[in-house]
Image 1 (tube, rainbow, N blue to C red):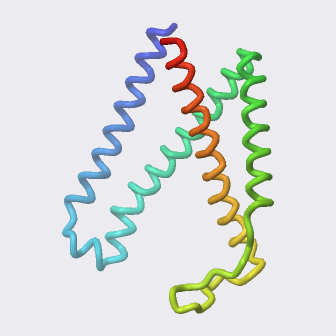
Image 2: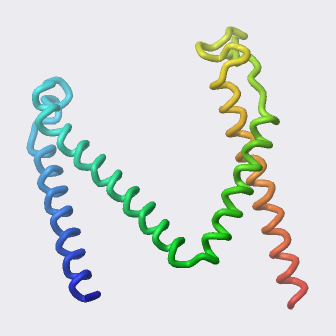
Length: 155
């Protein structure tokens, strides 16, 4: 079974590679200045490679999510750890959201940027993202130091 699945997967990857090469060669077969100026050429040459890439991206995301879910269902101990990890990340996100602010965003001349008005939801979420990254960085640094100390104590 695994041998057949491996062969099928290799054929599938080869087909994807061949389609990608054909689409890539079509782009280079056209004149560069014509691609930049002619909308018809753009639609006939560039659009298919973008669509193909988008489909491959969605397919890869879907397969990764599906395989992760299947693996979690097969291994309930990992499911518990994953749920705990997601809950911890959620708590850190809530903490970051309430730490963040939505004050006005100005440029170097002091003018309010478009969409940067006080109380804007975008400002709140950008601030939340910054705080979230900082909190996760601090937590990661703490675990790094803890692991380093453990290693020194064992040695």
